[in-house]
Structure formats: structure tokens, C-alpha cells
Image (cartoon, rainbow, N blue to C red):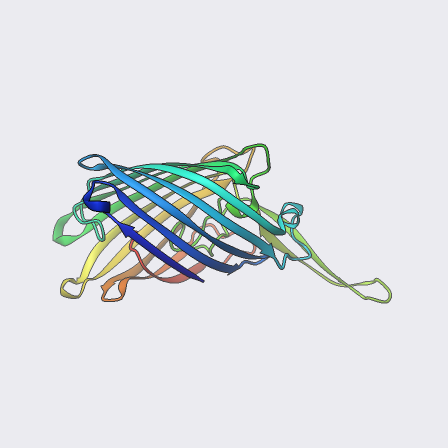
Length: 296
């Protein structure tokens, strides 16, 4: 996996931001392997003192392979190579005091992505996110992060790998990555190759993703070593992803936990542990995760 990006916030000494990325990723999920090779071009400009707009064109070649024998029909149909060509527009309002690690203010982002400008993948995806920071006594901060998302098909079924899957350090902590949302039972049967007799059988759960998502993260952040940039936190997360026929917030998942964050010379580091408060059959009761790159 690699990514190379360049961005000039004052292109040719103007108010415009111009940038781009090229990347190649490979991820091995439970039921398939996903490869993506592509790039994007970005153009941004200010609308007001704390308001800005961005437009991003993305072109991507996607390949789904190594699909499980017991995968859903939608996933088996998606096996092979496809291309995505999309344009996304977003509006951002930023009133935070320090973008890398805020202690007060808010950050709101609303975006709309349309895929189908060429290529063979078509959908429309809307995301709305808001995070707010409230300074408290003794250098502590209370923050609330919220996100809603909706993806609609445009003439074709929503691609399996573009649907909403929650779980993990950036959405719902205490749950395994991509294991929150609609799921179906998968039965695995092993038979004798000669007689055809069933030797063993087992059941697993396959997460099929939703066309809607909503989640909220509540955090209490406190300093541990101010001079070194080390902080601790306590959190409560709730949310879910929902499929067609289900409404927003028709069912919610919950977790609590704690963690440590360090503004290190290598970049922001996060080590966080979460406990799943309503573990379903096949789910872990807790999850510990580490990440580098951003605090929120």
C-alpha cells in the first residue's frame, strides 16, 4: 500500500488550493481481497473567513478477488475488475482554535459525491459531519463528534465495497473494523469428496454493509504530561449502519473505553481500548487499537 500526495494551499500566490494524490492499496477482508489503484485532483477556495469549498475528481481501478466460496451473491457478482470515476464537492466551516489538536470551536463538513462520470460504478453518496470542542477546567476538553451518511444507487446496485461498514478506531471503538451494521448468517459445510457425506458444518456472520450510517463519539480528554503532549481520554460511542428498509437510528450499538494520545515527533499516535456494551453472537467483547496520523 502506498500513497503520494502534493498540495499547494496558495497556488500561484492565489487564494486557490490545488493538489492531487496517486495511490495503490490492497486490503484483505474476511471474505475477499480488495485492490485499488487510482488518483485524484483537488481544487479548493475560501468562501468566507472560516468557510471553504473543495472539489475533488477521483479515478480508480478496483479489483475484488479471492472471494469466499460462502460469500453472498452480491459479493460474488462484484468479483473482478471495475472502474470508478467520480466528482465530489464539499463545504467546510472551521472555527477551531488549533486544527491539529483543538480545545475549543467546531468543524463541520458536508459533502456530495457522484460516481458515474464514465467508468462502470454508479452511486451518489452524502456525508455530513460535525465535531465540537468545549474547554473545561484544569486543561481538560469535552468533545462531540457526529456523522450521518447516505448512499443511493443510480441505475445499478450499490457496490459492496462502497457501502457503509462501521467499527474500529475511527468510527465505533470496541468493535472490530467493518463489523457493525447489517449482517447475514453464512453456513460453511465440509463434505466427503467421495461419498458426499457432511463431515462438519459451522456458521459465521457476513457483514453486507448498509446504505445509511450514523454515529456519535463523546470524549473527555485530559492532560497527562503537558510538556510532552501526552493526553488521556474516556469515551462513549454509539451508532450503526442500516440497510434498505431500515430507518436511521432504528437500532443502535454502544461502547465505552479509554485511551492515550501523544503528539509525537512522528505524528499523532493513538492507543485506545473499547468495550462492546451489547455484544452479539460472534462479536468480541472488547477491542484495543493503535493508529498514527490524526487525532480526529
